[in-house]
Image (cartoon, rainbow over all chains, first blue to last red; front, side, top):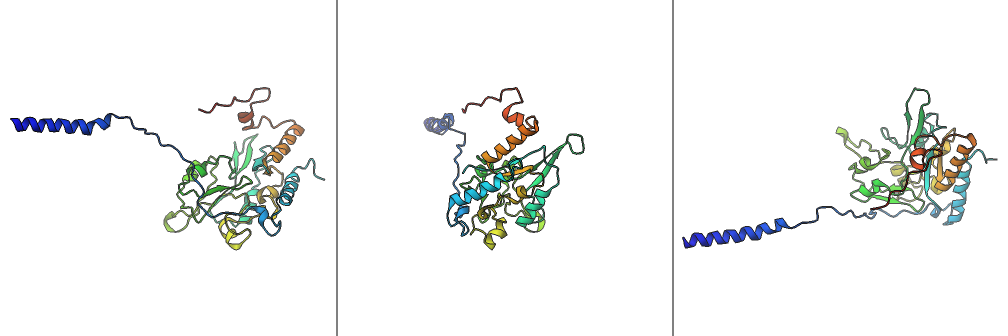
Length: 75
Length: 206
């Protein structure tokens, strides 16, 4: 009888210890983290031998082409 | 330098598919992959509208956000590119993209999916500029030659405009003002409100 009481007490203690974490509120929402590019590095278009690293020259060439798409101002 | 963008003028597009052909030819795009395509709404009915669609090189690209191997990057000119050596062909980017831009070639028997392929704004990829390796993987690098994408430069009616977002927006605005119509084109009203109507209020960020 004494042993049965002791086993019962241990069982109750075990249920209390194992069951308590179930009452806790854990954060279930996944927090999104922006990844970082893992591939090879790329060079800028003006780094090619044609432009020799001159960004302004390349930008002028692209702007000229872009503005040429406007037939209202094309000469 | 602002961001490189495409604008397609639905009032001008005549569904000739010249842009699709130019893209295929310039970049040697494999069979079954369409980096660019022309979509027609109400095809065959009076007032049908066509628009040329490819990667829109989003400022906040969803493909970039969902890629599990982080193979996407954005260049300083705002072009969204990816490293094919890193791509695993999972297809997440295809589900995320609202324009259906990511394409997957058949890489083997039984419909095995290859590495993702998409419009590069004719800017190649992370290989030596204008090298054979870059051309094989990503196609032509016209941007590094001071040229715009082949699709826009080939467009016969200049419906498809490419270049600095601010500059091509000005060109489009001038067209709308000159022809006296176009602000009612679908898509415009959604973004900026209908003529004589206030644009939709910006939603505060939560």
